[in-house]
Image (cartoon, rainbow, N blue to C red; front, side, top):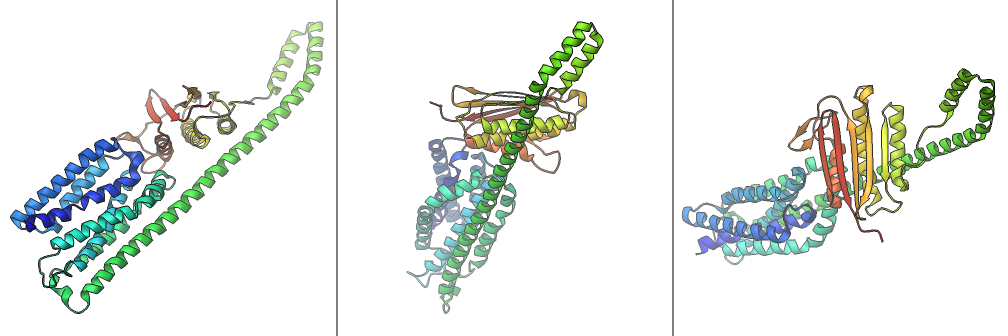
Length: 439
């Protein structure tokens, strides 16, 4: 019976492991938590039962059973999440690395009640100690996992930091696997058991330290990126303010000159000089200032729209805005401005590569049901749009397009919706941002 229960209990660490891996992923689940638990727990127990039976009948070491079990649970874990593979793999490997350090500690504690034991590498007592330490570790890191780690996953400013983070937990997993003694009797020599236990906890401490350093580094990078975006918005507001001030001054001057223009026009009309009158009207019309003094009641959105309106005019791209948004928005202004900036940036870049006679950008935004912002950006394009598995690829570099990826991330974080479709030389982005009902 022990031959079955020992590997069964060892594999049971998958249960607290899956719980720990899911803690920071609350906002990225594809299915409700209750339904997810109803699937995960039976799947884990089935793997544990199958592993215990295989180990008991065929005398297979539990270490060889862990590899397929972890691969199955890892694939299941990534399939149930709406998040990038880099993040899900990194989180899953981080949990595996922590539990591998605790497994090494369990091996060191394994022979304490029975020093003469030689069965590799864990007895029922060692497996029980490992399971208890894993459960206690979940409770110990519950708060930082559901707060600090969750905030880090929500940030997407420097996605490339996740491209290398998986190396760290994989390194510690390899170190712990290489430490497992082929013959447990060697731990009885001298103070090897104490050294083995010490190295296990040192590795665990170093792993947690490196994770903390990674969190601080990534948080600093994300904070700097937020400051950069805020400075960019401030520069947009400053540019919009300068544009409005120049337009207002030009309009004031034009109104001051209007009286003189009418006096001259009356003279041409009295003389019957219609050709000169028409020519003078063309000159006066050319002096009337262009520009939009107020695209939107919301100051932040008006600044972004006005800034890109000015840039599009400089590039010879016609742009039309229909922004029916109040000064107080139900959703965060930063989210809407970020989405609008990225969409307009992409639309302007596409417009610059489009034939001048076909260039056009149309932007509409309005409230729906008092708590949803509906935003649509439509632009023409020439060439071919690269898309793979629903992900738009960048036209400037290998990999995903940063702008649309940031839009999708912001919208999903907000609980909204984003849809992109294209055809016949027209690209359309439809976005819904959710918020609270404005009283």
